[in-house]
Amino acid sequence: MRHNYLVSRAADFWVLGGASLFVYALMSVAGGFRNWYGVSNHLGNLAVTMATMSLIVNYPHFLASYRLAYGRGRDFLARHWLQTLLIPALLIGFLAYAYSLATEPSSQKHCEQMLGLGINFMFFTVGWHYSKQAFGCVMVYAAYRQYPLDRVQREMVRWSLLSVWWYNFAHGGLNREGVFWSLHYATWLLPDWFYLLSFSTFLCLAGAVLYIVVYRNWRRGHRPHPTIWVPYVAMLVWFAPCFRQPELFFYVVPFFHSLQYLAFVYRVEGSRPMTNARATGLVLGLCLTGWLAFEVVPGNLDQSCNAMGTLGFSFCLIAFNLFINIHHYFLDNVLWRVRDDPEVRGALFN
Image 1 (spheres, rainbow, N blue to C red):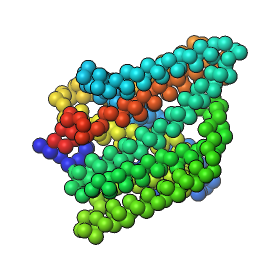
Image 2: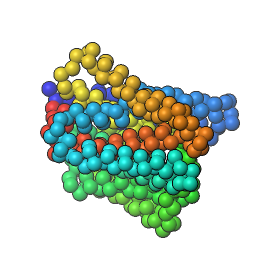
Image 3: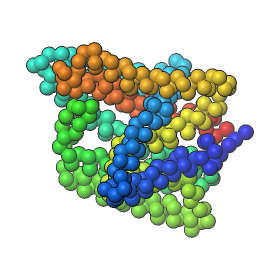
Image 4: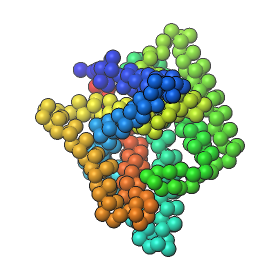
């Protein structure tokens, strides 16, 4: 039987962006009173809570993409060999070479520069990944609610979300240096004209979506269902620098992005025959492997080689984060192609 929702009609609004907007409003208001009534402590507690919740939300969402990709069989791997085989091989080679440089004191600076290049690339591709996911949420729910979008309107929404990515990245490039797991690295300094261009493009495309997509459909009698547009609004509010990005931004956004992603995983996994015991095992397995991959294994490797003492930064924590994040972005680029993939299309729309 076809269900026009991912989790439930009530839950989808909150999972796809409503909860993140509520937290955004809460943090923005509370941030203005951070020195009153211990508000700063509460915001700090929120960061700790979100970091703890990574164990059951953020980490599993990464590992779920591996299950969805490498559990599809040889045909899927061969068809998407670039994302499933070549990209991970290149990343392993890149990180192995960086480690070989780190072991020689004379070349450690080159290792830091290589890792900085990888970190910049990760932050560049994360905006691409988040934008594409938000676009997919809008398109899927528009289909669920039978909200008409012609080709021009769909492309308008797509490019508007991509412009948020460019705008956000250009804004981050205004800072000369960043820090990631104690590694200080140089950012990709971007010219001022690129920032102004990206900001202008963002404003123009957001206005075009409001007029060409929302307003014109309204005039034709098609009301914009809140769940269709909440992923779009959440992406703009959290990522566009013209909106006030709350303190502890980097703790909160990955959590809600992962929560949004897991709604689709829930729908796909729910379309497959599965006992309650197997479903419980799957959830626990994703949490455990995510914890091992992001914390236990790299953390212990760094301790065994005294990375902080010899290098001044956590090499393995950086390397594991770079590999899993970047590879995840490329895997997801082929995992959710509804038009080209009958299995995904059947899971989401049957």
